[in-house]
Length: 130
Image: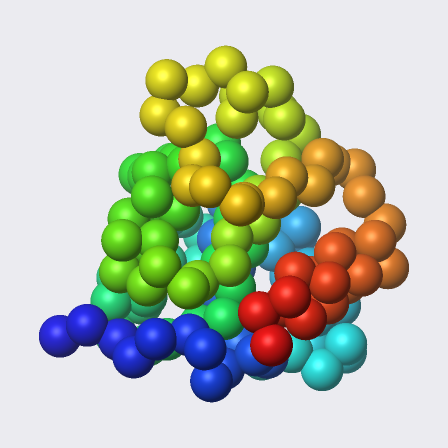
């Protein structure tokens, strides 16, 4: 079963972040900003969810166990070409040097970042989709 396209779900975000405290921190901030957030500690579990439910945005760390964020993003964009993708990472150079290039039009926000910057970037990215 493939999930419905993301176009009608501007406030639904799926978050993949292996650092538990960072994941909770980001999730709480996005919920306060009005988003519905479903979060996972790795890319594999997030991908399983993406196969079942549609989301407007995939927010993912790059370096994670089981499945890294770039591989997750590639699979996710195959499931839903309209899904917006944003990477959050302390290793921004990984995206630039990787043989497995991230999906076109994805964004990278380097850690550490301020929550207001994260929310602003997400608002801008999802406003483009609307």
